[in-house]
Amino acid sequence: MRPVTEKYGSIALGAVLLASAVAYSFGSNFTVGTAAAYILGLALLSYGVFHKKLSSIMPKWLKRTCGIGLLIIFIFVTCIYLYGSEDNVTYDEDVIIVLGAGIKGETIGKNLQARLDTALEYYRRNGDTYIAVSGGQGPYEDITESLAMERYLISKGVPASRIIKEENSTSTEENLRFTREILDSRFGSDYSVAIVSNSFHIYRAEVYARAEGFDDVTHIHASTPWHTVIPNGLREMLAILKMWILD
Image (cartoon, rainbow, N blue to C red; front, side, top):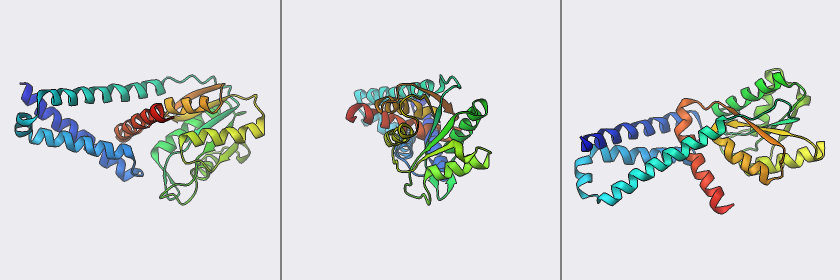
């Protein structure tokens, strides 16, 4: 039974990874997470399809190492999502920071729209807050992410006077650093913030926020479209490992 389980389990998991990578590619810009999903998916699918031949030539230690590696990836990504799903906002924060995500041309993607809709829900409960939108202009983007976010929020009824734009950042770390500079110049040092992002992104964003000097910081998560869960989780896992090792 074990060879049969390995064969069809690998085919099923590989197909899921490939399907999620393809679906993500159609709706969002290509990322390292998409590449990781393609690579893992193709590897697992190939192992399943050619299981009899590959299993006979692969040493047991290599198969066990690969299996343990997949289990570690699954646990790691699951923990990322679980951490980000536990909101701790008080709805009394002075500023909510909506972190940018990729846009195509001038069109907001699903992840970014989810962040903005979450910010809108928060704003309806605390109309005294300011919404800081953070994100510069990257590849395949005709305008800055923050401008696209501002337009979306205004179209939903948020006054322009309640929106603060940060338009120069190209990474999560810069999102928080440059936004901090703008908020400090406007409010001094006595203010509280809440970070708004998708659940997979919350942990790393909060680490960078504290590193940039945001002491009074909470977070609230936006939903993650189902077809982006795997690529986003893999991308964030790699980004967190990079942060732990290099930063």
